[in-house]
Image (cartoon, rainbow, N blue to C red; front, top):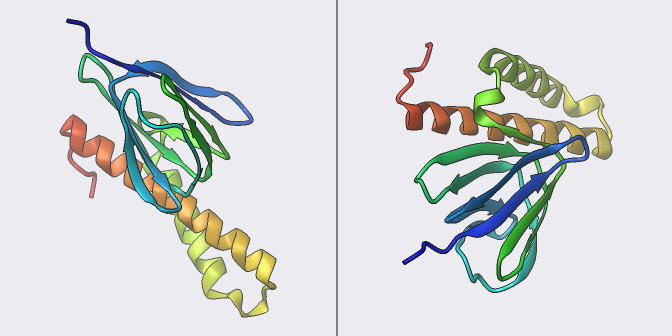
Length: 148
């Protein structure tokens, strides 16, 4: 008996981040986190900043951060068009922490900003939180102790 899988692809404007056959995909949508299995009903949804987790047929788990975008699910394929997406093992915790601090400082000084600038800073903060959650989940999965 063969295990059913689903084709998964995550693409950003810069590159194809991941392309593989998976057993399941968990993604953050604006309506909440959903898990997609083979033969899922077709849907299109907006993604929010968060963590994407896939499990392959050999039980290998892949963790990525995503800052937003769209997901399209068909019977045998899931395609994510993401604003940004990064595999957890590619992320640098030091750079994430620095970017988070800069964005938080900008948001705290938001009284001089217009709505568009404030929205951009808020989106940047959400992206950094997602990157941080992806790294933390990946470290737990791999049994890597935090540096702190």
